[in-house]
Amino acid sequence: MITFCTLFSGSSGNAAYLETDTGAILIDCGMSCKQILDSLMGAGLEPSHLRAVVITHEHSDHIRGVGPMARKLGLTVCATEGTWEGMERTVGAIPAHQRMRINPGESFFLAGMEVASFAIPHDANEPVGYRFFLPRTSIAVATDLGHFAPGVQAAVSGAELVLLESNHDPERLRQNPHYPATLKNRILGKKGHLSNESGAQAAVQLASSGTKHLLLGHLSSENNDPDLAYRTSHAALTSAGAVVGRDVTLQVAGRHQTGYLYRMA
Image (cartoon, rainbow, N blue to C red):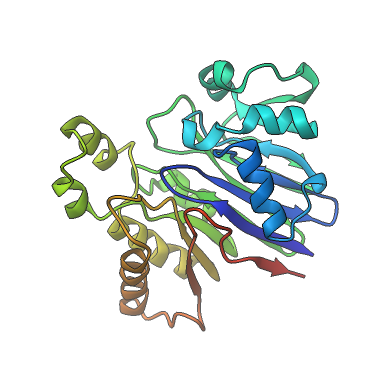
């Protein structure tokens, strides 16, 4: 049995859970150790099954709880050399035997699955996304993307389930009085975050490649809302000829609560 869900997804913190018959991993750990453990227990997931956490990049909303979780549960922490350099101070002391350094584009094995990393266009130090190859299926995480680059598309195409970024509505972002121009330009840039429209275009490409389940994530709390993100991707998929609910499922990951629980035999 394979289980996948998001625990948190948004600008304030991100973490996803993936379990196979031989163990479980976290993809990012961007909330406190207590919040992660409470979320797992609330969803009926067993923290003792965790073996490792794979990190996409060093921004705080992806690594906040990494150090305490790794020390408390003895987890292996997997990240690129650049990410390790960027998060070293934040995560604190982690024993050498619990540290795994990876290179973008390389594959490795964890908890009975092949984990393929791929470079992503984001303003971080050597950031990556991941695709997890399991018996008869694969799952990909593609968030924090300034654009849906050809390399990212190639890396995730055909995955049965994709956690895909749908971060913001560009007009809401531009009109937001609380964001300085520098932050707006960063988010809208080629190494920022996917807008609803860009995410919807990526969703169409993924559905065309054979993806059966789309989970929209990393929504901005100020510049987006779940209904708008859903409607934007739904409209694009429908215009492309896909029937949502038959050809592909479409869900939006909860910002502060466990997202839809996918179970695959």
